[in-house]
Image 1 (cartoon, rainbow, N blue to C red):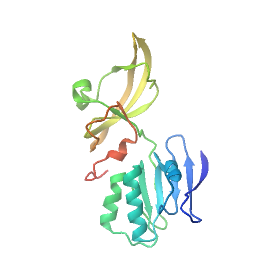
Image 2 (image 1 turned 60 degrees about the vertical axis):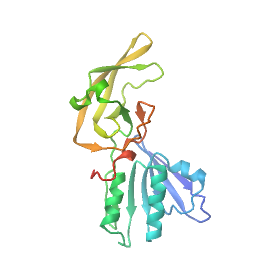
Image 3 (image 1 turned 90 degrees about the vertical axis):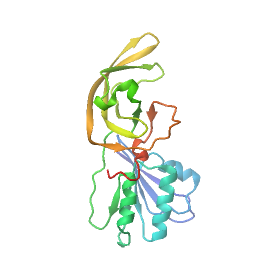
Image 4 (image 1 turned 180 degrees about the vertical axis):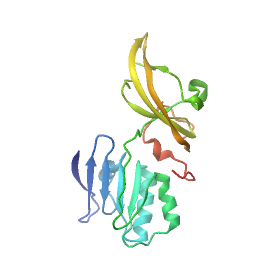
Length: 208
């Protein structure tokens, strides 16, 4: 694990601490107002813990979250001014409101989606035992969330790989279905089999 201090570039003494871990980067942010474009790049594709002392701080945080889609979002609300509506809104990012004495456990599960439709995978039944990919991709040993446009089904671990003509054939080492399928809202025009930050597409009405 490594720590990185980020200059937020918002003409103040505010800064963020970025914790670099094996599974996901975690950004602890003092204030998100008026961030520079360069500092926004540092916050992309990470989990956020943001301090909000006013409702304006909270609104700015939600606005930025909609733009950058953090993997998870937690709000530090020491002044205890946020209501149940705010708590439900934050759950769209699999997060919560934290107050003095709060503890949280950050998930180290797969964050990247492996996108497919039912006709290819029969994912309602947990997928298939093996699949082929273009040789541009190497995914052995990696873990993905098996999904389609509107549903996340479970965690899939990729096993052995072998050559098969112009492609690689991979074995599915294991598939662990989610206790409850999670509703997603992935754009219909997606053109990749890999979906970065799958949990950034959780449907706002889903309680995860």
